[in-house]
Length: 156
Image (cartoon, rainbow, N blue to C red; front, side, top):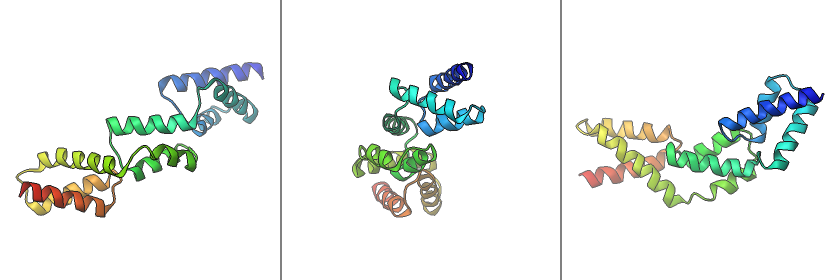
């Protein structure tokens, strides 16, 4: 079992070297490599004690990274983190750092950037494409329509 434990630790460290991971993500990856449940639990306990695995920090880091590199809505971020196995209360705590105004400004910046590429197209096409673009990033249709309406007024 000591050999298996060391192999599992090495595997976990390799995964963490690439990027931070949630406890559930690590568990799933180690299970895929056919480590026993006892070994996986021992490795995860070891990593949590050392501070290498912390779902609360992971959720906050994930949100910060996404907002800086590939902005998404709160709803989309909530979905991504739940897919990674982060507990709902940790997700909600991490999402509290995003206020509605910041989310609105982010969506508006995304829309402006896309709008600049769509100039010259009929207004109906621009509205449809902007709406689809924002909806795919997790914003509600009502939210998108409000932003699009404001942008069209600003341009008009």
